[in-house]
Length: 154
Image 1 (cartoon, rainbow, N blue to C red):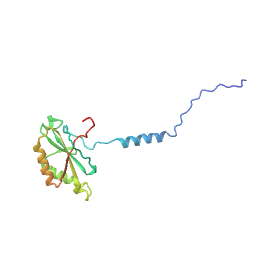
Image 2: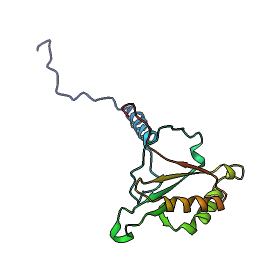
Image 3: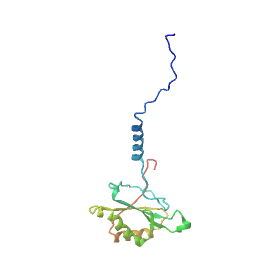
Image 4: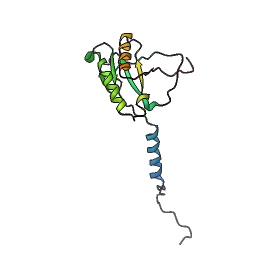
């Protein structure tokens, strides 16, 4: 017999003990980095640019109103509409909507609610004035107008 033996054909197994840890880390990474959009915007949004911007501190207290022409004009028409959360509301429904949004906050934060208006450039000023009047009646006095962030090339 020979002193040297041929190696048998055996597959070398890859150690898989750390595989669940790697999968968990990847899953956790994607959960942390993914941002889910809360509402689907149903109106066209070509937001005008601004010169002086201020970043908001407490985004939890910000509620958004979208104003613009509907994306589906054959269903909703071509007149500017107001979108709150995932539905269109009439101007006279703004007070009720603000009160509903305030009810979702704690009692201390209710007076600090900020309404952010995301208004299309082509929207007429009349509807904006009507919205401001209704917000005044609902005692929502902090109003901001959203604009895209300023980039270095502007």
